Length: 443
Image (cartoon, rainbow, N blue to C red; front, side, top):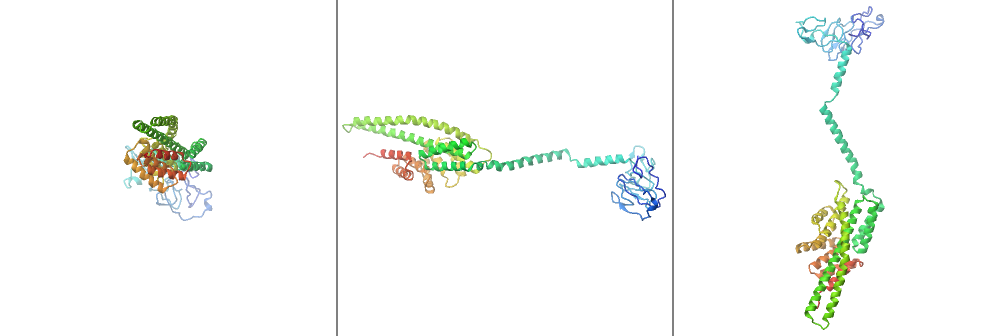
């Protein structure tokens, strides 16, 4: 069924407008042409030429090949597929359809194929515009719909881009989480770090109390947590040094007792031996509570250091350096198997003059009973560190302890004098200096 000139169904497509001598065809959506209501009011105009859908010249622009109204000056037109039709043909011109046993259908409705024209130039078959509209909409939908594989590819790219964007937006906030700490918290942590450089027990205890309060208030402050582990590790190292000093003092007293008892050189040798035995008993008594305190402190710092091992995949450089510093010092003081590896890692992440990696290595040498070659290397490293940073007192104390290990009391005395000159409250340095004096050969 085709639409007539008025655009409604049922009108005859071949009925011309009343007496129109030469009207101009108008293009409707589905190709039907309507004549003006008053044909006499329109003067005869020359035929207009326009281009059809596929570019051939025709008397009017035909989107789907509708015929011109009869009686037009130009009765020959070009269909949507380029076939020339007569003015009497109406409807939509499509390529001929081949049916089995019938050949191509002509424009006259069932005539056989013409031998004078090729198949694509034969008469067209008229279809209702409703079908043409549905076909065209279906074709547009298919052309505009991507394939399933392309859809999945685009969906994957969109999801990946969303995840990447979320990571990029979230990383700065995560990266600067320590920078969001209040200024008072950062200042308190820095003050505790300065106290640790003085290395005496009073200053260290103040730093430990301050850092414990700070980490309780800000449990996600990684640098404060790491600095607390550093302070406790330094305290543990000092207690171990004190225990070593008492052990050495007890050994010296026992040697003196044996020598006097064997020589019996003086009349009062026996009373002297008894006095030395009493001193040795006092040293042994001091060692008991000290070992208990060492065990308690080691358990405490082990728990805090273990919490620092669970590092995130990405973290700010200051937090990373602080965490590695704490782990390296803890491993060095406790003679852990990975102490040297952590000290080397700390050397790679900390700035010059590589102070704390040198301290961590020296602590490991002293706590593990390293061979003389390692002792000599650590002595050299500590000397270079003291030249670069003379206000950090732990390298002086460690150097004195290594000198005593090398049986060099003169070098130990010189370093301990320097410590007391810089900080007269350094109790361990005073005790070690007394040990050097008592261990000097008797005349």
